[in-house]
Image 1 (cartoon, rainbow, N blue to C red):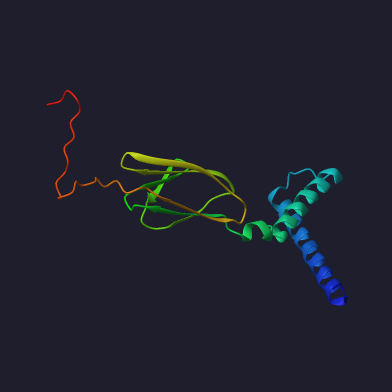
Image 2 (cartoon, one colour; image 1 turned 90 degrees about the vertical axis):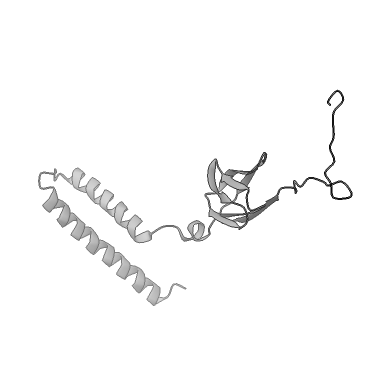
Length: 156
C-alpha cells in the first residue's frame, strides 16, 4: 500500500500544491498592491488561498453524489395528470423517471373527478418505483344492451 511509489506521489502532489500557492500569492500581490503585507495579513491570506486550493484539488465527495435518487412513476390511465411536490410532471401512459433530492415528496394523481395523493420518502441513492391505476369508470349496461333508467321516489 504505502511503498516508495506512494510517498513519491504524495511528495509530488505536495510540491505541486506549493507551486500553486506561490503562483496564487504572486497573482494576489499584482491584483491587490494596496493590500496590507503584515505577517498576520499574509498568513490569513495564505490560509484562505491554501484552503481554496485544497478544496479545489480534493473535488466533490465521490460516494454520495455518484448514486442518483430517482422516483419512477407509472400511472394508468393515460389521461391522468401527474403532480410531484405540487408541480405538474405530465400525464399517465408512460413511466416518469424523475431525479429528486432525498427526503419526503408528495405525489398527486388527478383523473376526471378522482384524485389520489400520497407521500413518499426517498433515501439517498434509492430508486423508488411507484404505481397507481384508477378503477375503470364505465357505466354498467342492463341485459339486452339498453341503459336502465332509474327514477327516485317522487320524480315523474
